Image (tube, rainbow, N blue to C red; front, side, top):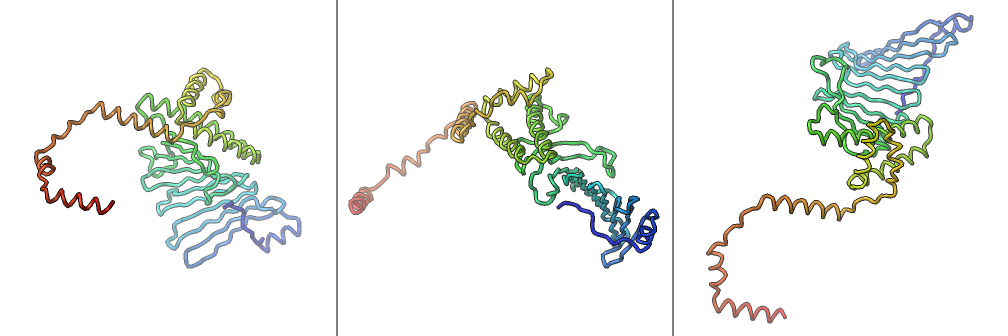
Length: 308
């Protein structure tokens, strides 16, 4: 939902001032309703066009619950507060209609999502979804620390979640996380540039590349290419350019059967490493198998002949 400046009616005083060529005055309107009080403040440009409009909704207890500011450049900010005045949710919209939403979770983390062209509530074309953690001692502050990020194009997650390196202790996991960050951020930047230029065709092509890369994530050849590009990028070369030069679009993904067989081999190998002692056959089972009367055998033979 794109946040557009609401229609308003200019005050009689400003209409008179405009008629006589005078400068406009700021306006403030307050409306009481059963849920609380809504105050609208309007600032004008010299030509009497609206410079910005701020709508503040107060609940019945007098605490600020929501404030929305619309600006003449097409940007807007919507901020929600709790009873203590802390920000619980904030939505910022840029002049292109793209929006960033920051929401405080019950565990104290902040989750941030970026939506293209104002489609904030449809979930379409989400470009990134961050998880934030409030820094110690700043519970009521907006100062946050990013813990993880999931990146999407057209609502499709590009791959594994990327974590803040400080939360990873294993060196191999840290390297794999760094490779994924480079790969996904490269696609994200391309998608953002396509959106800024309004090139939907280019955005669809980037999505196709992202889907192809995701298919290849379990392929050893692609993983080797990613690691090679990662090493060269640390020497100052462009990771995205190196990856495109690797002709990964020609690679074939690992089939589900091959993947299942690989997992089976791993399971067999792990079982061999930890052998389990065979349970001894009990004498009671042997007794049950051998102590069968001639009458029972005769009946079984007769029954099988009938079935034939």
